[in-house]
Image (cartoon, rainbow, N blue to C red; front, side, top):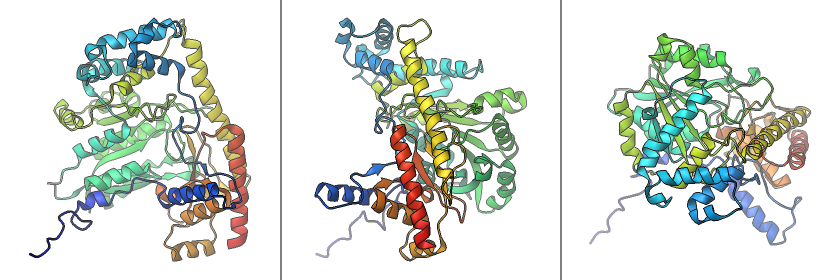
Length: 482
C-alpha cells in the first residue's frame, strides 16, 4: 500500500494564514531568552539581566492595577466579600448592582443578556459623556473580547472575495502589526499611507488622495484605518486633521476604522483627544448622515491597563444594523469573559466626586499620566542629545519611536545576513547591553529610515539608564561601522 501524502502541510494550508506574522520581535525574543539562560548558567555577560523595553503591558512592567477596579472585580467574583469591612461602600454598591444583572448573580455564567443588552447601555452613556452630548445608540454597540478580536471581525465583514478586485485597506505607516496581519489573513490588500515624521507624525491627507487613483488599478479601496493616539509613534491627531480625514472618506466613499484604544493616554501640553464620531457630528448633517465609522476601544491600555482580562467594544456609526447583526454570529465564537466585561463597565463609569473611592481613583490616574508626560520629556531630551538619533515629541500612548542613523557598512552587513538594518542594530544592542527593543521594520517605515520602539513604562530612573545605554551604544555602533 502506497503511503498517502499528508493532508495538512505548509504547501496545502491556507496561504493567507501562512502570510501572517503577528510577533513583532521574533528572533530577538528567542535570543533574549537564550541569553537569560546563559546568565543563569554563569556565563559572563557585560550586563546582569535582560531588560525588555518593548511591552505595552502596564502591569507586566510593574504598574499596579487600579484599586477601585480590582475591588469591584474581587467583590463580584467572590460575593462573600461584600460582608467584609475592608472594602469601601461605593465599591460594594457597584458590585451589588453588577451582580443583579448577572445570570444567577455569577461571573461564571455566560451572561449573554448582560453582555449584549446591559453593558451596551452603559457604554452608550459613557460615549455621550465623552463626546459632550453627541447621541449614542446602545443598539450600535457590540462588546467584544479585546480590540484584536474586534479588528479581525470587522475587517472580515468588509472583504468580499466575489468582487473582481481585492479589497483595499488604507493603512498608516508606521502601523500596528496586528492590522498588517489581519489584512493578510483576510486576503485584502494594503494601501500604505506614510505619516509625516517631520511634522510630528501628522497624516498628509493630500498625499492619500493623490495615491488613490493608482491604488484603484489593482484593488478596490474601501477602508481607511487610523490609530489615534498613535502606536508606535505617540502622536495625537488634531481636530483639523481628523476633519480632513472625514472629508476624504466622504469624497472617496471610504469606511473609517478608528482605533482609539489609547484615548485616555494623552499627556503632552496642548494635546487633546477628539473622537472621530464627535468631529463627524460637529461637521453637520452633510457628513454625519453619510460617513461610516467603526471605532474600537478596550481596557488593555488607557488608565486601566488590564491586558489580561480581554474586554472592549465596537461602536458602529451609520452602519446598516443588518450588517453588524452578522457580527453577532461571528462573535458567538469569542464570548467575552464576564469578569472582563464587568471591569469594562467600571472603567467607563468610575467613581464620581463625593464617592469614597473618588480621590484615590483620580490620584492613581493623574499619577500615571504625569509620569508618562515626564518620561516622554526625558526620553526626547536624552535621545535628541545623541548624534544620529532623533525623537519627535511624544504626545500620547505608551511609546517613543525615535529614528536612528545606521551607517552604510552596517546596512550592507545586515543585508548579507538576511536582516533589516534596524534588526541588525537591535541584535547587537541586545548582545552588548541586554536591552530588547522593537525594530521599526516590524511596524513599517519610510524607505531609507530606521527606527526603534521604546516603551515609556519603566520607572523614571531605570528609563534614564536604559536611554543613556542605548545612546552610548549607538555612538559606539556609529564609530565601529562608519
